[in-house]
Image (cartoon, rainbow, N blue to C red; front, side, top):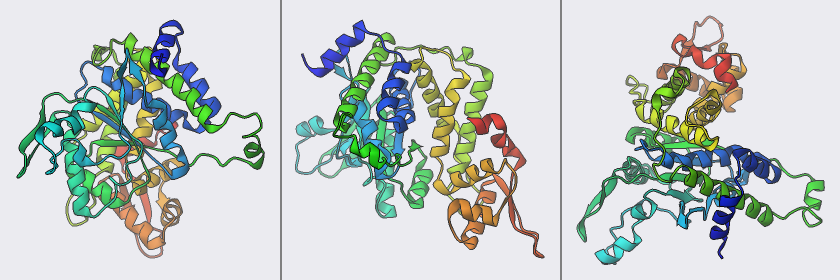
Length: 407
């Protein structure tokens, strides 16, 4: 009997709760539970009968953040022998629909990535190369990714093979990993229509000398910890997918979701939409429409609810929505927003912004002017020795309220 079959057999006998999974993960990798839970929520979006928007959640952090450890926990998960996830260790945007001149059309059909990930979760443990390159290279990459993330297939034309690709319903989910990327990538994604969402992961806490000394003397080695966590994640995913009748097996009664929770998700979507606007001080800001962000954040919240055996949202689903919304903003803007949070929503001075961004005073002033251009804040420069300051626009004052800041 293979490991996947064993996991599924165990799942039919011993039910596990989300608390059981959390206990195992936090025992072995205490810094990674939030990322694992959001990964589980992303997988669960495939269970929603009305979902037409692929959810792409990309873990962002330094090499020591544990991103690939999290991704590894999902690799190999199955439902009734059918893989839930498809792992690609060397991913390129051209893999979705290949136009390789050296390969026949019949063979291309066997290598195309898009049909392999339909109704599944794409796992890409290493995506740093996708987020690097010259601007024209980035535009080419993200124009393909943007279209694929519409969930309607992807058609291409070339001089060698002509028109080929896939049309129709190609819903999938995506868990990926990358190191932090620069502002050019944010600009390209925004101009093409942002489809990716992110979860920022910090470097895991450094082990002490005492902790390191225990590794070979009684404490489980990394590979055993990972194996234990992977088995628990696999068992739980198999159970959740089976209990909810698999792909698009859950009809969701939207009217039963609390109006306040729906409003909170919509507010996060609107905030995210303005924060992802590409900066051009010579024109008025052209904010992206918040509908896509609202749909994806709502699906993530519902996926989280399904993990907790609920088919109705509660306030417990909101912290994850807020965290993804914040993580999906360009870093500089997110840091200023969090600086406002730490300052109780009160005005920020140049020095406070400088410290938050770790930049020079002049660069801090430019960042403050950018936040004013977005419409999130007012930049006050009275001259005559009066310090410049940044004040939250009354329209966005709700984002500084205790209930939102707590989330």
